[in-house]
Image 1 (cartoon, rainbow, N blue to C red):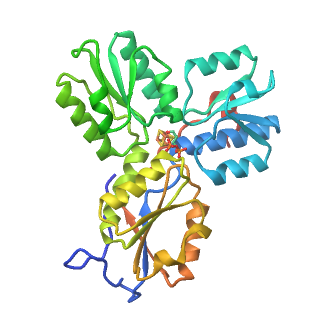
Image 2: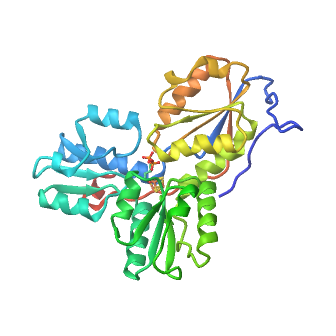
Image 3: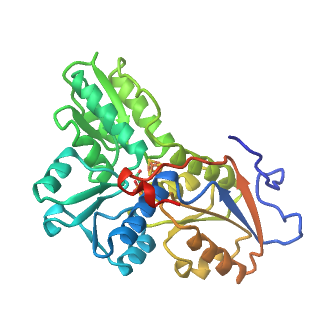
Amino acid sequence: MTGAVPLSVGMSGSAVVGATGQAKRILLAEPRGYCAGVDRAVETVEKALEKHGAPIYVRKEIVHNRHVVETLTDRGVIFVDETDEVPEGSLLIFSAHGVSPAVHESAEQRHLRTIDATCPLVTKVHQEAKRFARDDFDILLIGHEGHEEVEGTAGEAPNHVQIVDGPDAVDKITVRDESKLIWLSQTTLSVDETMETVNRLRERFPLLQDPPSDDICYATQNRQVAVKAMAPHCDLVIVVGSRNSSNSVRLVEVALGAGARAAKLVDYAREVDPQWLEGVSTVGLTSGASVPEVLVQGVIELLAGFGFGQVQPVTTATESLVFSLPRELRAARK
Ligand code: 0CH
Ligand code: SF4
């Protein structure tokens, strides 16, 4: 749903003094932070802890956020890289980013009890990969090489998928039959950069087919739209998020691309360097889809100490999507 963007903007497009007369203000992006898939994945681990007690194993980071991982570690969650690090018979949770069938098989071989916290919107892309592989298409998966989600999706059809890591990777692609070719993507990419990659692909392969529906998910898109709306008015955009969080890093790039004079990524308020605030009157603030709101509030408090007392929301959409928990834990949600 599209909403008003309540900004005070001068003729030049630069930020002006807010209605309260304060020179320093924060523009706060809305939506920001947790998406439905992250909310579900984190709650899955919390409910599993309540139901089964520690230790519980999680393959990879449940979501790419340092604070979330550290908090769950303190509560008895053991994060591992691979299934072979998990003692036979233990409970293992798969992260929001999804896993390949080979990982499911290896967990089965170790007799692990598993709960799958893969976001349903990632699972949807897995289904698309399976379906087009069954129809013998070549699948061009746009995404970041080495990212867990890309490994999981590609692993559904390793003989049919080629990874295209951005526009510059297009030239090295070769396909079997140009008339049976489809692109899919990671869910957390920059919308604009992905379209650039698709356009480059289509120049080479005019018959390239589009995915049946958007693979870049609603949450990724909404957070980028909000940042684009506020960035031209910002001397500095602060994105709260971890360095390994694809969607958070994309928000920094989108802010810069949309006209922010500077953009920085921080995990915690304490990482905000006071020098960044010199000569700054408008700070834009947002957070990635894996970031708890408490961390954003920490930045707001810190900025208040530097005179940024006015917080003005920039609302470009409202979100209400909620996913049900994995069936093993459904009864646990009140
Ligand atoms: O943005 P990425 O995919 O790195 O992951 P995150 O920061 O954990 O955010 C949640 C997305 C999970 C899968 O789409
Ligand atoms: Fe799901 Fe999108 Fe959130 Fe990823 S970013 S967990 S695909 S809702």
